[in-house]
Amino acid sequence: MITPDTAESLLEGPDEPRNVTSQNAKLPGIDELLADVLSDPSNRISTAKAILIALKNKAVKGDIKAAKVLLDRAYGKEVKADEALV
Image 1: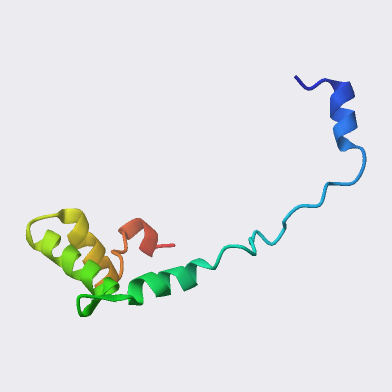
Image 2: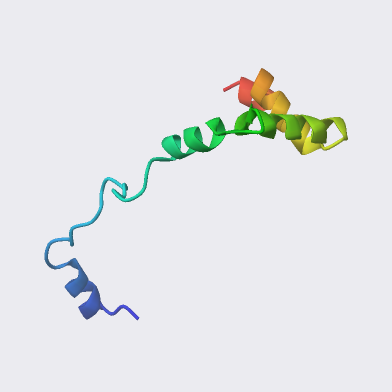
């Protein structure tokens, strides 16, 4: 529990150094990882194309979420009436 005495002691002195850049030097960036994973060809087609084909197959079978993902990426997300007025 924080009492006035402990609260005052928390405010005294400089802050401890912290990682303000939010980057860890040991981990590669997400852009690099995605490029690596999605461009890796397996069975003559890229992983990205295989994912799109799987989404298309699910959409054709009636998976509404898969259809929405494909259509949103192809044509842009639907603009709702209340968002269009802003």
